[in-house]
Image 1 (cartoon, rainbow, N blue to C red):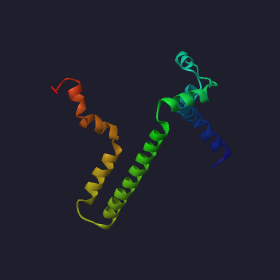
Image 2: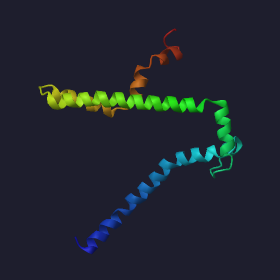
Image 3: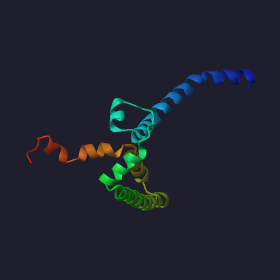
Image 4: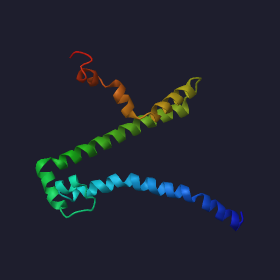
Length: 141
């Protein structure tokens, strides 16, 4: 590849990089907003101030005095670790089964498994949520 061809390729990639930079800023902005809001008063947040303030420790003391923060974090860590371990065990056993056992249905079952993993679980929750009809008064409850 000559130097001229290489520079032409790099020039064609400039719009792609600009698009990726813009999407990156859009993706990171909610995290920045959350951190900024944690350091401001509630009136500053409601006014839309996005510059970090100096009320972080005051807000943190209010949070820990009003909510059981450490218990909630502990519950979240416990749930995440337990879910990860169970998922690793089940997926390891399934992977072993798919590798060792061979029959005519293996490819079809594996395709269905992969397809089910590609659909977000929130979509299944919306379909199978039995509380929604009773809340909407579709089914008398």
